[in-house]
Length: 382
Ligand SMILES: Cc1cc2nc3c(=O)[nH]c(=O)nc-3n(C[C@H](O)[C@H](O)[C@H](O)COP(=O)(O)OP(=O)(O)OC[C@H]3O[C@@H](n4cnc5c(N)ncnc54)[C@H](O)[C@@H]3O)c2cc1C
Image 1 (cartoon, rainbow, N blue to C red):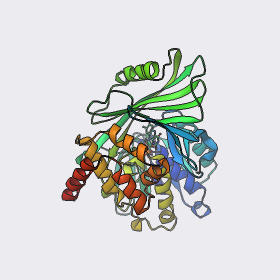
Image 2 (image 1 turned 90 degrees about the horizontal axis):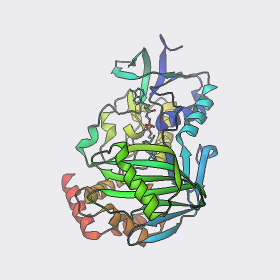
Image 3 (image 1 turned 120 degrees about the vertical axis):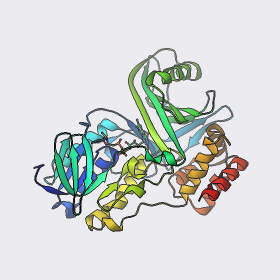
Image 4 (image 1 turned 45 degrees about the vertical axis):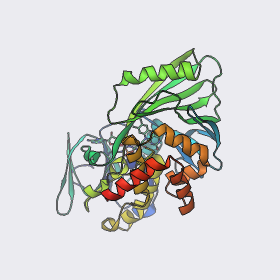
């Protein structure tokens, strides 16, 4: 079915954004007469990542939520606080469950073809896009592209949020599976922001992650001393086994990814700007951004689609400026936020759904002078 056909749409890269788009389109009756091709260089059969996110309601992938926590904790040298997050839950979806669920769901759709191949080039012609891969060429009216060619976004405020996680199993009960630690800053902070997540899925199992914000990503072994010291000294756990590892890096940037779009090649996911620049969270935003894109696809009006850029871009710029230029530290900012504010208001702000008043509260909670200086610098740069 692949060659000789011009597909209506091609999804180039089927990770979270690509598969979310394919899944949502497969659920629409009005899309059933369209031809959709999915291309990814990977088979998507590995558990290559774990997504966590807060949510007050339910999402399309609720049935594969692996674990959820009604309560969170924030810790730093100045604050150790239990966070009651109702009506939110903090949820975990494993990559492998998501890929399997979506690929099985779209397998039954007659109009969707999935191929495993590495894309080498997208060539835009007058009325189609030619997708060159290692083994083939494909044609599509429009391509949704979810992988980056190069890191063009280094021009703007930019930092990597990079991390390594160990899924550990302990000999005795050590964790409360109803409480996850969202951020634990109880580790010496150098020039870079560094903190830990603790995500227990039972009394004896947890994913523990060390996360850094810095310009350079570390080699895998460089994270291990942080994890060992945190588990041993801060959590006081001596007897455990590492069952799985997770390594990752997320770009935190206010770069406008959509400036590279054309009428036929539409960037989506991380490559489309769906990662929140000041937090690195993307799961919920990818669902939201893909949902907003669907009506334009169904009405064949992609030329009218615009990606939302709102006032929160300025807030993100100010946050990154204040932290990256050393005006204040990540530990200081987050400690103040969680000390002064309800977590629900912080979530609303990070979800870009705050009112003017809640935004103002969040904006004025971190150290005032560094944020004002960052505001002035960013306004000058506009
Ligand atoms: C380890 C990890 C953990 C994360 N955890 C969280 C979290 O807890 N919460 C949260 O909100 N966000 C998290 N994120 C951030 C974000 O949600 C994920 O990166 C998410 O997978 C982004 O989706 P995407 O579709 O943009 O990219 P991806 O899911 O990375 O998909 C891109 C796809 O493109 C394919 N591809 C690349 N190059 C080519 C090519 N040349 N040809 C064909 N295919 C290609 C890749 O194989 C991949 O399948 C995490 C990121 C990582 C890396």
